[in-house]
Image 1 (cartoon, one colour):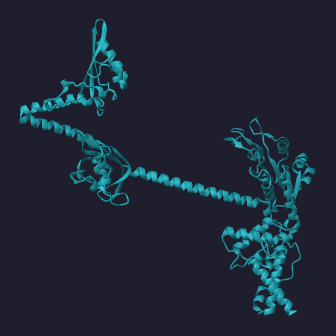
Image 2 (image 1 turned 45 degrees about the horizontal axis):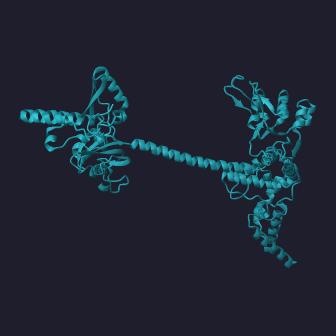
Image 3 (image 1 turned 30 degrees about the horizontal axis):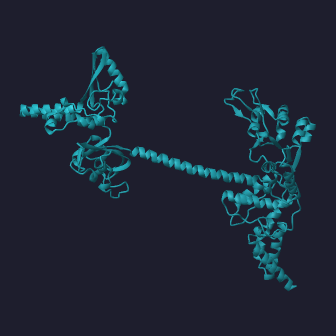
Length: 622
């Protein structure tokens, strides 16, 4: 359908209305069906508008005609969505259908109507002017009611920034009455300072830049100032008002975002705290992992006795293999420490070490504890549960007190050790795991096998590589070293100064039988750390333990020592004996964490120098 208007002879309607082809199709069909159609849905394309020389003089006002102006440029404007109304008339000629399209510029039409009304009022005289004034006042009142009902605060300013309108929402948010703001420069009243209280130059104000540059400015976070001097965080939009190309003012619509920003700040602080906490927990976790590694490392199995050194050699031999290990020994001899050292020295150290105290598991829950269960497998099974074998897959399973496993369940444990397969309780699906077993017991399993309380085949499966932890009474030379270690750990844990262990204390410790082994020694040293005062160790050994060795030569009572004044030679001899005792207690070591210098709480070089001096003095006297 070509257009016949001036300048558009070769332009097709589809090109002119390319943005509203659907509306064009509907209007055309309606015109062909009914003979004519009206629509406001057709919008001329901008790329075609410059070529349009169409000037509908029927829509020109008298003032426009007198001034020689018209509104043809209205076609190039898109400020009103319904700026045009189109009339389509169907014409049939020579058997062909044509569509006559008339475009009416509504704005020019309204201007002409306003001018005609004004002319009519002018001719009608003063009564009509008063009626018109009432009419326009009513229109203005309706507009003000709309603005007043808005939830956002609204300011109107003229080209000089003078406030011309304030709605009730703005009054509520800022505490000003409209009469206190209208007629005053808005910037100087509510926008004169930054959030930090510094001066806000009006030249930098986005509100005024809006109508100076004729652009809409949207600000996400600034402050307006209340009448009481308190800031209000706001987001606002400043929209310029333009009349015939001249900025005549602006409308500022703002919203109080104080609560939202407070929530955002709270959330941001919470996220920052979470990030800080996460970082701290990660560091603590790394530290604890390091501590666990340190405590579990077989290099921290303290002792210089042959029994301890033998265990260390056995760990070095078997750790790198996947062989099952059976650790035997009395309670408190460090079987769990040996198990941890074996795991950390193995290739499985990056996988978990799962500990199971077989003596603490109720008989009816053994299968569930080891192999897991599915929901509903038995009363109380409200959810699926992963068993210890599954948790230890790829790692090590430490079965402490393995001799406490019921005889009728030992066969199921044996199957897992032989085949590496098991089923959860209540499920037929077979699962396969790769687990190394380290077992420990304070029982004589050979005797238990003979009595029929422990399966022989399970014993052989566990006892591939036996390690025996000797009781502390058989490792007398380890007692002093362990006592200092436990004392240091206890003092750090309870945050008290570490007291000194005297030679008399060491002799008392070595003379005790230690039925509870190293665990009892640890408890004794922790109690001593708590009871110690002024750097003196209050060693209160249990009375129930019998002496395991003959006591050393009796030590002179403290009160008697302190009451006697020693000569210089006696003092020197006493110092020599004290140093010799320290060196003897440390097996000849002078420096290092287990040396005599550390025991005497002095620098190793100072101790060497003191030894040379005392030796030289003894030679000169001889």
